[in-house]
Structures are given as structure tokens and as C-alpha cells.
Length: 451
Ligand SMILES: Nc1nc2c(ncn2[C@@H]2O[C@H](COP(=O)(O)OP(=O)(O)OP(=O)(O)O)[C@@H](O)[C@H]2O)c(=O)[nH]1
Ligand SMILES: [Mg+2]
Image (cartoon, rainbow, N blue to C red; front, top):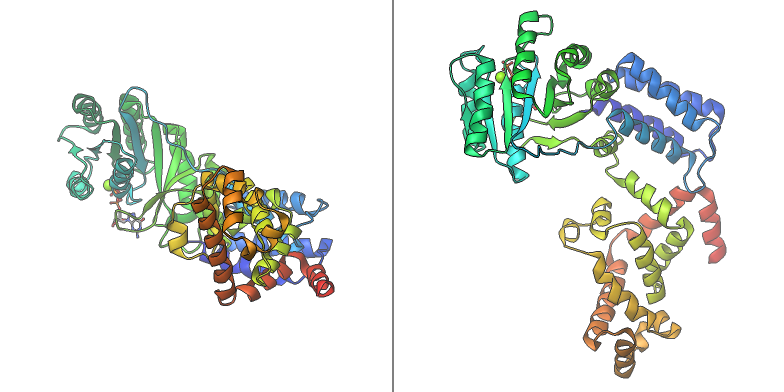
């Protein structure tokens, strides 16, 4: 999804990247192109207008942040705006104090309700819940059978009977209470909002089971039409959110970008394919990152901005790459990294870190003895760890309240890290490039002076 938008935005950002400063015309030009990109991605006209006017307010006459280039500034503003129109934060599902938590699915014919019901049941199971599926679509003869097949695949029981949908829903609820199932997912028949009788039936089902969550299932390929229907459903059912399906087949993504603003309800889940595991909680920030084609790097820029002075970071990086990185620098880095948040999360955001490292369990509390050990060293020892012999090690261990073995381990790991940094092919070039990119010409000039 979002391929069209991604491609166009990337082009816009590439053109901005070279600029040292952005003039009023540059901003106008960029906004004009962003507007076209959004329209081409089938985003609702009114939503486009809002996005552009908020971006304008953000970019024109604002104090440009010192640590970002103008190009990055625009990327960040667009990113923040995308997160906002995609709903801000991910849904946090809460469970009814008196189970079951009832989830009702509604939507147009063929939008993917039955598939989503099974996927949702699977998702709840992964959250440690015990769901029960209810087949309340008695419209299509094969509908309940379809749900039973899918239910068997995700190993969730299905309740239904050949009576009427309202009765089935009500009995399903009683069944969940009887057998102790704590989540009830109710699949309903596809209906057109113009079909008054069917909409009334949906209302009655809703009234009989009093859902905690009512999700409208929207096929993202129907684009703007789907968003329009959502308004009609919302009037009858008081929606809590949207499940956006078939986003694997939609290159434009306009529905996703419009639904929150038009209906006022966020996307709760996204269905990304026909397989039952192709389903996820919708994360606006991740989605925005994907649209901009930069993973979670932006989050990282944000955090780094708050916590570390960019100049310090660059200086440390240069030393690191040139092999002049001492334990003092190591300590300073540890401390800024700690300010940036849990280490494992942070490492996961870096695009160049190998998977084995990302998956390794790293926790912050492991850093405390490390800090204590480094603090117990003399400045000479920190600058030149190789002088730390046996008696120095004993002294440092005693001074930091650790063991000689812990000191040995730290020094060994530090040595390995240094060697590793020197070995990683392309790392030196990469940091130089990225720091030059980050601070423009200034950094280059400074580096020359330092040499
Ligand atoms: N590619 C893709 N196909 C999907 C997705 N979700 C559902 N489908 C397919 O869309 C078709 C319709 O899905 P259903 O779940 O039966 O839709 P429904 O809303 O229950 O349909 P009715 O009950 O007839 O209104 C099926 O062939 C599904 O396999 C998705 O995320 N991606
Ligand atoms: Mg169905």
C-alpha cells in the first residue's frame, strides 16, 4: 500500500535534500507537490486541504530546528502529519471487567468481515484470550460454514444456529458466558447502507449484545466510496474503529489516510493478505514511516534530538570509526543512550544493525555496573585501557563494588567492540556521509579544521 504516495514523496524530498535553506517559494513548491501526491493517492479532498494547511502553518515562519536540515525538517513535518491523520496512536484494547468482551464486525458485502473475524480471534488468542466466534450471517447459505472452516484453522470454536441473526448473537453471548470464553467476535452479513432493513437488523444485533467494540470492516481497494459508507454505518452503529482489509492490493492508500479524518474513528487493525496471519494492530507511526520509506529512523532522529547533542554524537562517532574511542567516550555514549530509552527498542530501530544483535536481550540494568567500573578508573586508564594490568583491575573492582571478573569482561567486550568497529566494512564512510548530511556543509568544514 501507499506505493504511489511513497514514490512521489521520495522525489520531493530528494529535491529538497541538497538545499541549505528553504525559501518561502521552496516551501510553496513542496506543498504544492505534496498536495498533488496526496490527491493522486486518492486521499479525500477535504483531508488533503487540512493536511496542507497544517503543514503550511508548521513550515512557514517556524523556527527551524538547529539540528535538522531544511529537507529533514519537511520530512519530519510530513511524517508527523501522516501519523496524525492515520490516527495518532495504536488502539489499546481494554477488556470488559465482566467477560466476555464483545466485538461486533459490520461492513459492506465482500469487504472481508468473515476473514477478519477469524483473524481477530487468532489475534486475541495470541493476547492470551479465549475467544468464541459467532456466525450471525444467515443471509448467505455458505457464510456460517465459511466461518467454521476458518475457525477450525485458528482453533477457535464457532457458535451458530439456523434461526435469525439477532437470536444467534444473543445465544452466542450466553454460550460464551456459560463456557467461560472471555472474548466474543460476532461476524455479520454484508449489508449496503442504503438497505434500511439490513441496517436496522445490524442495529438490533448491536443492541442485543451491547458490543464493547464495533468495528467497521472496509476494503481499502474501494477507496473513497468506502469512506463515505463509513459515515452512514457510524450513524447507525456508533463505531469504535475500522478494520482496513486488502491493503496488500491497494497501491494508493487513500482510504487509510482519509478514514480517521472523515469518520473520526481510527484504524484499529489492518489486514494485509489472504493468509490468517496477515493481520496486525494498526500502528500509525510505523505506517507513516513506511510511507516515507525510512523505517523507524525518524523516531530515532526524534529521540536523538532530545537526548544527545548532535555534535557530541558526531565527535564520538568519528573517534569510534578512527579507533580513537576510549572508555570515557564509551561512558558518555552509554549515558546518552540511556536517556534515549530502553536499549533493545533503540537498537531495533537502526537499519544497519544485524538481526542477531537486534534479537539479543539487552537490558538497561546491565549498564549500572559498567558505569561504576568506568567511574573507578583514572583518566589515563580510560583513555588507554591497555595499561590496565592485574593490580589495576583489582583496585577498580574494589572501587566499583564489582568483581575482577566483571572488570575483565567489560575490558574484553570493549576491546571486541573496538575491533568490530574497525572491521565493519563501509562504517567509516557511512558515518562520515550521514554526519555530513545531518549538519550540511558546516560539519565538513569543521572536520577539515580538526585534521
Ligand atoms: N488479498 C486479500 N484478500 C482478502 C483480505 N481479506 C479478505 N480477503 C478476501 O476477500 C474475499 C472476501 O472475504 P470475506 O471475509 O468472505 O468477506 P465478507 O465481508 O465476510 O463477505 P460477505 O460475508 O459476503 O459480505 C475472500 O476471498 C477473502 O479471502 C486481505 O486482507 N487481503
Ligand atoms: Mg462474510
